[in-house]
Structures are given as C-alpha cells and as structure tokens.
Image (cartoon, rainbow, N blue to C red; front, side):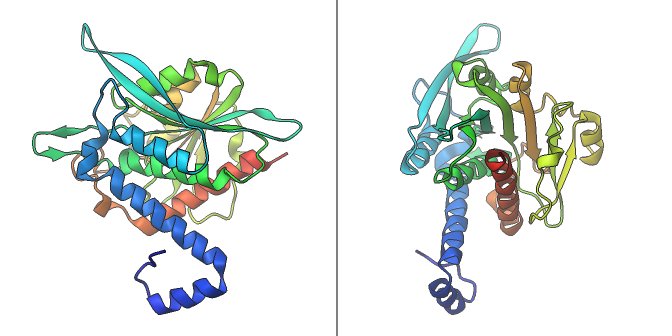
Length: 298
C-alpha cells in the first residue's frame, strides 16, 4: 500500500500498531484514485452515449465486480430533440438482506454522466457528480460484509444531465417493486465547516435517523423552498433538480444528499483541484454513518 506523504515515518509506525488506521487510509486513497480517474481526460467528461456501455459505466461495473457483487447494466433509450434518440446505461448491483425479517429495499443512486467534451477541452465534473459516484462505491464496499436489514441496491445512473432519463428508467423497472426509499447522492464536495443538506419527501420524518456526531453537519428539511433559501438558489426547484424526482414520481420516499450550490457547477472549472479532499472524505464518512443507521436499525 502506498502511504500518503504526511509525516510518512509516523504513519508507517502507526499503521503497524493500528491496523484499522491502515484500512481507513487505504479507503481514503482508493476514493482519491476513483475521483482522479473519473475526472481524467481519458473519461472525457463522462458524456458519451453509445450502443455499448461507455468507459465510465465499464469502470463502475468493474469496481462493483471486484467487491464481490454481481453488477448489471441496464440499457435504456431516451429522446433527443424532436425525433432523435440515444442510448444510456445504468449500472447497478444488489446487496441482499439475509435476516429473518427484512424491511423494504433501499435504493442508493448517484449519476455518473456529465457534460462531456467540446473540441479540445472537456467538463471534468468533479463535484457534479464524480463525488457522488465515489461515495456510492465507498458505501457499496462498506456495506458488503454487513448483515443489513433490507436489500440495498446501488445504482449509478446515466443521462441525468439530459433529463433524469436513467433514473426514470430504473424507477419504472421491476427492481423497485419492493423498495420504499431512495437516497440520492449528488455533489458531495463540501467546503470546510459547511453542512451537507438533506432534503426529503414531505412527511418522511427521516430526521430521527440522522446521526448527530458526524464529521460534517447535516441540515434536514422537507421543504424545497427552505432548501432554496439555505443554498441561495431561490430559483431552483430542488424536488426536480436531480434523480430523486424520478423515484418520487413512482411513489417512493426520497432523501437527497448534497452540498447545494457550487460556483463551478457546469463549467470546466469543476475540477479535482477545486475539491477540498479532506472535507470531501469527511462528507463521505458522514453519509456512511447515516446509511448505516438506516440499514442496521431494527
């Protein structure tokens, strides 16, 4: 394992004494590797739509497969313009509940597509939404060895930027027949000392499940207008702003998790260098604590 270059001799000694620290450090480096790859020129802004799963979809599939899941692609068609169409590919995998009594399934989503490239430059989409995909992959690995109280379906959706098409395709599929909750991860690259916003369906009352002692503070609401005020995005309809809307349309309870507004949103400046990596990892660990509360509470 390559150690981070922070007082290397001390970390090497600490790892020998505390194996749990070594695991945490390895996970942190793995998240950074995933984030680097997803925002690299090779992935070209994750905006390619082809008959076969693109490089981004194949990468996510490979990562889930390496964890011991049996991932699948879900191809879908969506309209472009008046008469055109394109094909996208969701990537999903299921962690099966093995308890005697199982609650209804949880679907965790993060869209992996972004704006692609134009000419010699591309849109890296580090915060939007490589950050959410990295968190989803972390959660898949974190939950894999656990005995969860419900099926957990991890879905990396495609064509969110084109109109939430991947989420609509999955929400309407048989895979949601026994589901009751969608957690949607979109833009988790918080700034230091800033909260993560939790926006839920009206009447969901999910605030009782929010852990209190997490590295990043959570702010919970069931009002799109309140979230718009908190984020200074007064013209944004947060209900329809991301993939959770597709599951809401199918009658599922949703919980959107994100940092809110980002001045680099949908620009070429949404790069890896703009992310405070310490704050981001703290956000991922905080989301993990929230999800663990949901999937382990009797």
